[in-house]
Length: 324
Image 1 (cartoon, rainbow, N blue to C red):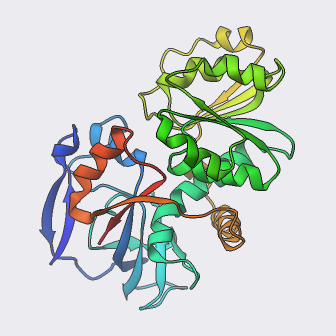
Image 2 (image 1 turned 45 degrees about the horizontal axis):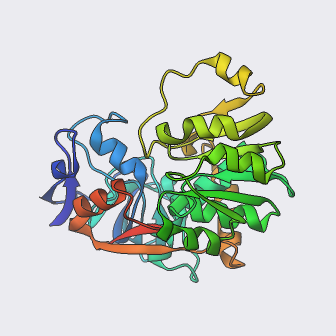
């Protein structure tokens, strides 16, 4: 029997239940994946809370690393014993093992551990598509990164520094300043104590920044608008403080003909070619040490509810891994 997390209703972390399941043999195009490490991501809390509706009952989690235990009919490219990882889009990664479509798997290089993969795969590919394919950041640009000490934040800061951009990061607590600085942020602002936009304009000589990476949402939206340079781009990719609602298009005009996008990873990792190119770029950044897996905390798999509480309370740093 395997153990898997289920939610039968949306709500707080208390809705996460655990059940014994007996897995059938993998079907056509599927493999059985034995999990060794599972990644925790903010999107997991959105599925659990109902912010991103899912059919109920539902599993939770999309990101995990492990090993192939069985292969279904028609699967090519994977064999029993192969080390693999996935970041979805299918849910159910909070489990000891599960059957997954082979097309959603990535083969893991020998020098990338299971915990590293679970900590960095989704967040790293998020940073890759945001910076390189969505914003197309160029060397010499200055970029504002909200939640710069978080999981995606630290990776994005390191990535931006490596390609020659200057990073202004924001953090919510003083004890996170050093983490953002260690990742490579040239300036770190306290989002709950400082006027972020005023400080950004001061740092940039009044110009503002051409790109804002905003995974926080509601609490930072106004600061993001006011921090942008003329014709700047805001990438609103997360809702850690709640969703941005009621956006008035005239506001974009008033702040300097701004551009805004609400992108998601799976619109940039659609074709096999896009997926292969994105993951290859991430692995190259890991190999040369430009990006690292900053695992701030580990929880046992069945302590997922506790992990959700810590994440939503802003008490985590870097990536969080659920250990199987």
